[in-house]
Length: 346
Ligand code: NAP
Ligand code: ZN
Figure: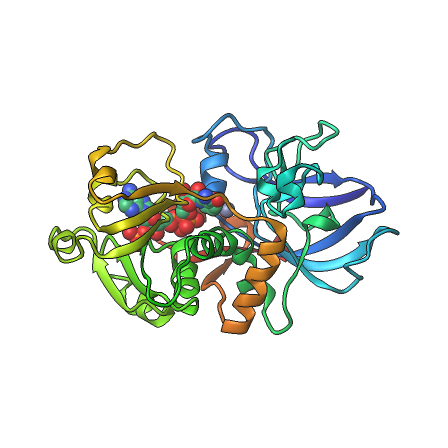
């Protein structure tokens, strides 16, 4: 057993407190990681605030983990002490079902074990990355490429794979017009991936405040969604719209921006159900889709692709005692573009 300091909440909406938990003893296929940085995803807020289903408390959020390997079990083959590694949204899965076998562990039929707010296969709660140490089976650990700093890499473990996976799946690339809706943690890396994949990229944000930064991340165009003229100008334009918005959107309005066969892909996960008129689909043979993080092989592929194209998150590093304030700022969209906790301050 290894004791580790963590930031935990005792109930939905409670303030964070510093406590201590014990990580499990190293199993033969386990990797023990000294966490250096942990990104704050908007999903952490949804989960810690009880926006979605009920939470398991006390809760230690965090699924954008970057750190250094400090010990490995005797059967570990992929990692050695000193390796720079990451852990994302999942820490275990059955490893045998059709989805695990094809590297889509997030869809495991037994139910993949989430990095936090989940029960492992022994029935014990999992605790995430707002912590100084974590023990994870090696199948769920990825290598952070040389030259990529751990702090700017950590958000890629969720924000990166969540946007890269659907952009690849729906063929964002040369000759395709892609709109990214919402420029937060996910949105700002989505611009970079869509641009690097060769698509024409349009950023759709509420205000014009982030225009210059969007263009510097690789957007070709930028429009304000608060300006009604935007929806006339861009009608029928896009092959894909990737919505990263954490609140409900006017689905019919955004569908009107898709060309024939266009797809609105939702990765943003608002708590309330949304509505649309089916004629918005029928008229131009459009689709509405969703996408959920990504599997481990694709997470490693995403990190390698990011390293090859110089893609990282733009971050604001904070101390452990600033996390409550950071949550409030994210809810006001006052973050450019990801808060990352320096876990040495715990
Ligand atoms: P974030 O940093 O808060 O960014 C969300 C962006 O959405 C904001 O920057 C803002 O963009 C826009 N937005 C927020 N409130 C809005 C409102 N009321 N109306 C219109 N636009 C609004 O959040 P994030 O960490 O990127 O996460 C985004 C969403 O993705 C969350 O719901 C999260 O839970 C979800 N998520 C899903 C997955 C998955 O696997 N599907 C994985 C990770 C996260 P502008 O200021 O540019 O308008
Ligand atoms: Zn996340």
